[in-house]
Image (cartoon, rainbow, N blue to C red):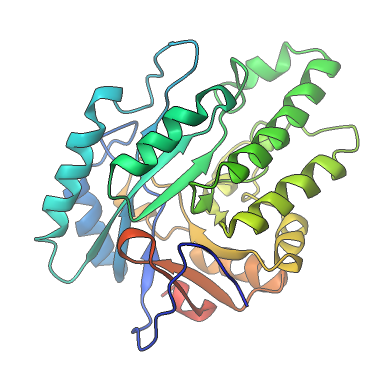
Length: 286
């Protein structure tokens, strides 16, 4: 049985389509929260989460795809206000909070200071190297540099999980985005990361956005999902929407097929303030 400090057993819930990993004009999305809600109704969703980027680099360099760092309180207040009037759509307040090992104290304070329904943990930087910014960044690296980036990514995923503040592990194996794959054996690092995710009671997402990136493969691979399932790590479906409300459930049926191939029969759902439960996989798509 899946366990988690923030897990609440909930029965009697209607089966609904939900989409939790979505970005709006609060960060690097080009659609508003209101447009996202309208898209959710059209897609048949009854739960939709907003999880805009919050990226505080330790070196102080501002990231243009993050929300302004002084706007987090306003973001939470605005989503709560909209949620109170969203009618038949349950609006969940999330955040994609980038992990940096140097910022753990600040990350804990952010998690404790605001009433998030869930936190998505992600790693987009290994040191100052942006792993999903530009293919040219990978191209100019030496072979050793690429291997260090892959290894550092998984080491940071493990540390992120051990911090104990996150609910969802975002787009595992993101380092494959531009088609640069590791050539050395990282099985120990990957196993350590997945063990940490399991110990933290986190959920792993099947992120369908990868099918529309140069790698042409969802995050993560079915092999990684099988390793997650073997550790009893719960899963959810995400589209990582940025630019169109029509993408809220993009490739969810295809994603469900991958989850089923990895041995999953249920998906995780999120309620208010960390409430979590499981529903049959068939409820994840129209």
